[in-house]
Image 1 (tube, rainbow over the protein chains, first blue to last red):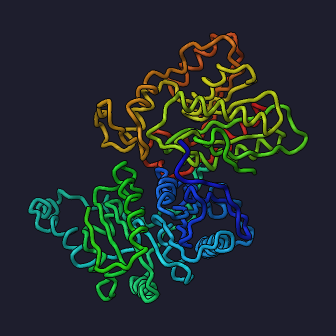
Image 2 (tube, rainbow over the protein chains, first blue to last red; image 1 turned 60 degrees about the vertical axis):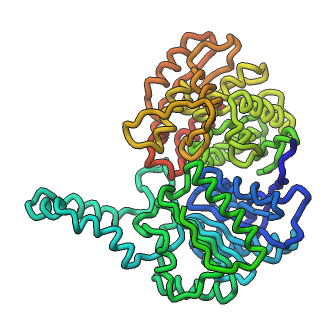
Image 3 (cartoon, rainbow over the protein chains, first blue to last red; image 1 turned 120 degrees about the vertical axis):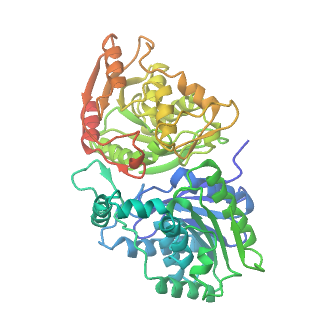
Length: 300
Length: 255
């Protein structure tokens, strides 16, 4: 039985980027919509646990096109020669991808999909380009709330043994302080180990006010957003309603869907967690063709 | 670089053909990648290897097995036989595309085991490079499953029905049984091609394979080139591997 999608290799943009376009078996959809899957860190277009491939192929039978491609210098795309920083080139290259799909396939509306650094860049690209009408972010930027802090620190504060150990000197804090200092000074590359390459993209969280402002811009444009949060960034999120508490000043309800699964790791590597991501993406894409009536909050 | 889909229409495989720089050699090189997280970690390195090989005149084909990377299929449909079939399909595609009659196979990790087994079924393979090969499939399964498991935990039992997670990829009971029967050091056919065993660290299983190969009439070499494989180290899962010395070693061996 032939696959229920069709795929072709594509090249586009000034940097001759390489990607694979997945389409419904009958050809480009008449909806004029496409999903663009962005690299996460150094991982090539296949995505962690082959997530990008799974998402693209599960969307196709429902009438969506999906493009997974490699940014310059990643996977099978050549490195740029103009010296642009990744944060700048990534936005330009997503624009290249949208320009290609618009001219070659008549796509008018785009959804950007990304995990971690890919989520950050998808968000920034959406702010920069009005053709983006949807953003799907896995482990996106999120900020501490009072409730986050209570959940994180309260168990230690009320633990009598913790206090006793600290006060009696049984808890030696030196190693913790040293570990903290080491973490702060850890370089993004690994000098002296030429056999391992790590991403030049050091993930930085912008000030919350900046993200809130950009989010407001997207909501004013009626951009729909799907947020999937894992338990893999527990240093940033630890409860299901945190997104809504964090951005409570925004009237986001009708356009934003949030899911939080504390059992998932950062790349959603568990088989059930992969299915959660793929099924959520497909369901969200299908629902995005009709107006969303109410705030959608689901806790796995 | 020429990316394309090839093979059967109901099960297309993804490949990238790298044309050689002149003067061209009469032997094509097929690169057999690992699977799972190791496939992700080595992607850039195998691209570099292909580019280096083309510079010395080899036409090169990189490809993905069914259910892996950009090829069609699901990882839940995988089997060693299917991957061997894919390897044979890719080898034939390389010969057709490059117009060569002889080939060499370069395999990494499980790809090395597949390359050797595939070569044993053919008569057009001059040499096989085994880079950090999976020697005993059972050991490999244990290492990969434990990457995501709490330290010291026992391997989950095979219930004969459900796939289990193997560092982000599905391991079906059928594939697990296939792998657990794999022992590369077990004697193969007498017409094995020339073998190059290249290892990034000296492990007992590599030495056992080396000693086993030394007893064969087929010429073989063993090289230890220290480079950061650390395949069983969970903290290395997100790090791409770019072992320049091993890449140069392989190019040198095949040249």
